[in-house]
Every structure is written in C-alpha cells, then in structure tokens.
Length: 102
Image 1: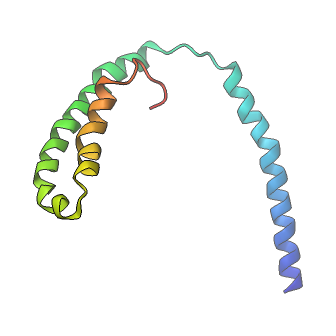
Image 2 (image 1 turned 90 degrees about the horizontal axis):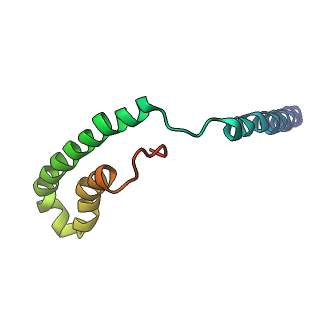
C-alpha cells in the first residue's frame, strides 16, 4: 500500500512538472501568430457556415413546433426556443464577419 502511494505521488509530481514545462511553449505560439484572417476562412464562413446555420434555424423552428406539446407542460418553452431558433439565427446574422471564435 505504501509503495503504491509513493509511486502515485511520484507520477503526479512528474506529470505536474511536465505539464508546466510544456504549457510555456504552447502559450508562446499564440503571441507570434499572424492575426489576419485568411480569405479561405472568410469564404467558408460566408458561403458554408452561415447558410447552414440559417437552414438549422428553419429546421429548428419546425422541431420547436413539433415539441411544443412536450415543452408547454414542463415550462421549457423559452429554453427550447432559444436552443432551436434563437442560437442558429444569432450565429448567422448577429456575429461579426469573419469571427474566428467559432
């Protein structure tokens, strides 16, 4: 039992040291990265992601109507509308162009 505990503590200390030494290299890469948005990303955002999100909002509106008999008794109509309708349309029309956070 004592040997198992010692091995566990040594492994924990070793993994902590390795994690701390590796995180510096990952953080450094972010600051030197070019911050401009590529044309391919902007095209993909405009031509693929936003139309798919509009389609998801339209399909979500249909799913919302179908699930109304289940959401009305539970009082989850607002949450359901937010998930199925509001979020896809916000993704399409409200966010900046091009947005690298998504």
